[in-house]
Length: 159
Image 1 (tube, rainbow, N blue to C red):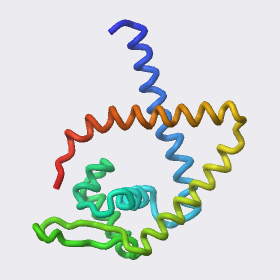
Image 2: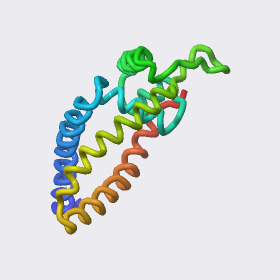
Image 3: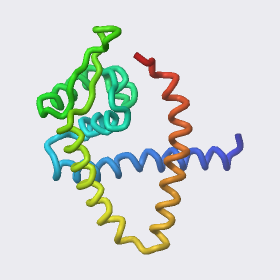
Image 4: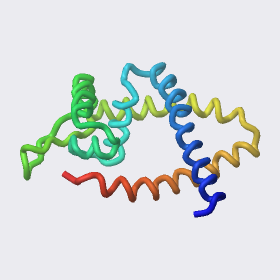
């Protein structure tokens, strides 16, 4: 690998590291204004919205959250009547989690409210920047999905 490639990779890494807190801070502020749930709980709701039913281990693996933290988050979501536990019919040691109707509705509403906050910020961009942001975010999403899925899939065991 030559110097130009190394500098380019270092720059990518620096940009990616910078993006997380920037997005996280903005999203967290928006989420806190809309709900008493923390971002971790919303990420769990999002995963369940996408996959419908997941075991506690699968949730932890997909979100890179230790199982004890998943348990605490899920317990809070159960107390809010947003998710429910289901025992696996083939192995009662495995506890699956799924959204309740209330959880589905609340997640959709929170997601819409947070999206509206982001929309208001993005709408301030001129057409050129809007086009650049649209294309760039799509490309980054595709590339990160590709590179992160390869390394992630080998580190998670399916339960």
